[in-house]
Image (cartoon, rainbow, N blue to C red; front, side):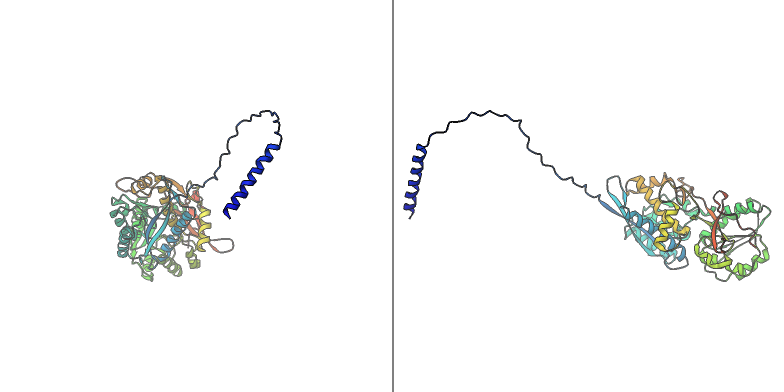
Length: 437
């Protein structure tokens, strides 16, 4: 078979050659030579590439909160303010650092039960086991003071909030920074206001909770009042947790002061104001710590009317910030998140985070020394007011930029209790109700 196919193929080749030989050759037609510019091969274009997302770092913020115990009201609001700041920073993509990375935050916290001994145990745990990068203080001067020594011992930057006592910042600490106006200035402004309302008033009763913060406030108040020529007709402390102020009210009635100043925290302050009203103790001016600025103080009804309180911050105070949100923006965001108006404790929690944010942005890193340098050089205006720290060896970290405002509960046109800023006059939203009764 193969041989037959090969023979057939040969015959076909020969036939083709004979046919080609019988066909006349074609005359070639001259053609013009066309020269074209050489064309470049098309360059392949690549689709634009997106830059890789920045590397994310996580910084742990450690703190304790009084989820239980006598400081629960103030501490919970402080905690909510800090949480709002953290949620906003993380949702915005974090804080950019100099190396191109961004830092976001997570929190690690425990219930300190309003207990000083538990605070030291828990802050040690936060610094060592939990590896917290930064610390925020618990609420109250006593608890913050207990935490400060741990922060310094383990080389952790700590922003204190809800902690006004001056003494903590006079112990030689280098890494502890105060956001509140110091306690020594809490009620001195109230005395200035009283002098402007009636310079003839001279008899003052000072009653206070036997607790670190309150004692710091009234010691400074007493010295300031005596220096101004006032007569302190009663200077009396009461135990933490007091619920029956009857014996103290009797002493006040005997001393016949024209003004009463002092207090402690929310629970004791609101109870004292209520019992003072129920006994209709005659007094022209009443200024108490902590309790009056709280929105829930209005639940006392007419017992709240006319009571004045120093506040670290009020929504009515229209500061123009150069860093962070405005007061209106803070109020709107807080109300949306927690379903209530923020108190100054809420604002204190938020501004503690804002201080840390500004320091990290200025430093461009999470390095402790760089952040310390940024805090030492900080001078900024926030929704909360001015923030600036003492950098002297004698009082390092003490807040020297922020001033108090004084609120008073009054009634609006509809008869509802509302807060008004009554001092200083430059920020007042209404004249003070005076005399009280």
